[in-house]
Image 1 (cartoon, rainbow, N blue to C red):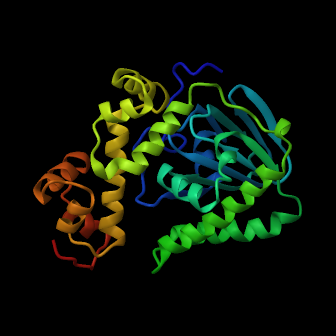
Image 2: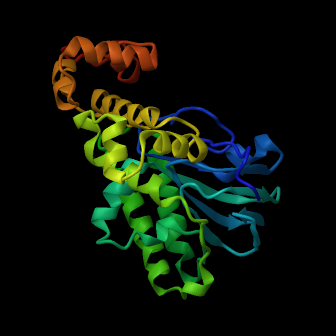
Length: 296
């Protein structure tokens, strides 16, 4: 399957920005696939890891031109940048969990370097662990759909347990059973890690390119080809995501958030936020947190 013309989605079927302030997205497989005739056409995600959890039914999976059929309960790992498509039977049951780049970087540290599995496609049969994982995924979906106190911490805890299970399968599974991705994705992964480490320092694209030992033009071309956006847009989206999360999940004032995110002055931060969202930070906070008032 050629990469030319393959759309880059934030979630399958959506050529939009990351649609949530959460660091993950969770939904049932039928919730979205039923809207597309039970078929998700080939696409890729620039900076998202997806876990396809099949409990019942059949899923025909194509990743980087390789096809296989899931006929028993299993969990399919779809790493960032992998071109993939699905066709489901009408009786399909299960979940799709999507993890953002910031969450992946956080888990990378927590899992003591056992995150290599996240860079390669793999399909893990559930076996005796299905009851445990059914309960875990149901709890994750339930927590995702509600807005109870401590929701962010609960989601992180549940997805960490899930990723520990997946990481252990990757460690114990023979290398021959795991898929491989084409070359050329490593630089984008390195760029993502640099952005995660330095987005609050407001590095220019030239600085990122210099750290990667490539030209800014090369970096931009790479991002546009594989991530569907420019290198600067990648940085802006990460900074904006953090701003939204701070407005929702912390009691910091707009001035404090501006300082925390490395802006020279609050007015510049407010203009930046409005330019990217169409709302002021305070207006966004009021919509996201109705009935609550936090000073500016």
